[in-house]
Amino acid sequence: MKNEYENYQESSRNYDKTRVPVGVEILLECFASTPRLLQEQTILDAGCGTGIYIEALKGKVGRLYGLELNEGMLERARKKFKNEPTIWLHLGSILELPYERDTLDAMMCNQVLHHLGTEKSAQENFPQVRRLLVEAYRVLRPQGVLVISTSSHPQLHDGFWWADLIPAAVNRMSARFPTLKHLASMLEEAGFSFVGNIVPLDSVLQGEHYLDPEGPLNKSYRDGDSTWSLATKEELEQAFERLRKMNQDGIISNYLESRERLRHKIGQTTFVFARKQRETGLLHTCG
Ligand SMILES: C[S@@+](CC[C@H](N)C(=O)[O-])C[C@H]1O[C@@H](n2cnc3c(N)ncnc32)[C@H](O)[C@@H]1O
Image (spheres, rainbow, N blue to C red):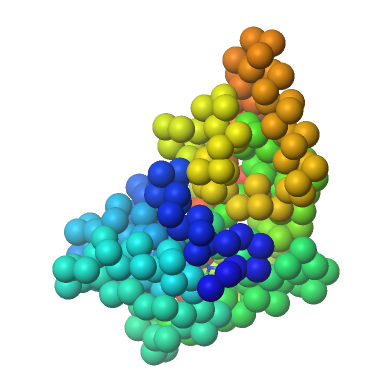
């Protein structure tokens, strides 16, 4: 099955080489704030991909469900967890959750929102994101939590060093991401209490390969982030040429350092934390 712009059937082959589960401790802290003990909880990973978050949470919570639209990604997850009685994986869309009302303690949705919809989604007020939030509200137990990891628009531009090489693609990608403010208001509209935004400043989605100065020249590196799939052939060629030149001229280290200074200030991702009840407390917030 081909996603609208990223071919996950193909990139599922390289996905695990280029991604690490950032923010697992943040997720656990949010899940622990629900009434039941972690070991008794049933938690859904909505858009679980190859299951990198399920792997990281395995044994730390009661039961994990994974729902994924792409067969290639799900197949990778199935291979990892075939003998795990507490992990249940399903093929399907997170826009129609195949679970009963009030049955899940928590739900996480990591790096999926921008795949719901198109570049016109903002003009249409993100109908698919709103649909997901209504579904999440339905299946969560009262006081259950929803944690969405996504990126703010500043993070998309300056949280990833290579984003500066493909600015037009990053602009196209940004149009698919609701702003954090908009997301908070959509959560409230769906009935959730927005609790706060949490930003892990010290980790990167791509793990140890992130700062490879020639990384973007390789398809396997680019497969780790769908922004690359929004670059035109010409934009890609320009980016490669600029990168090769910086490597040849010996200025790539300075360039990476200056890009990293920005990332250290704003991070790459934001965990948006909401609860199925009204409340007032706010955690650390980010613009
Ligand atoms: C960037 S990957 C993130 C995967 C995983 N959550 C992670 O953090 O590694 C986005 C995933 O969302 C999945 N996806 C996109 N739209 C979906 C939908 N409507 N229902 C279920 N999964 C979806 C894609 O197939 C892909 O596996």
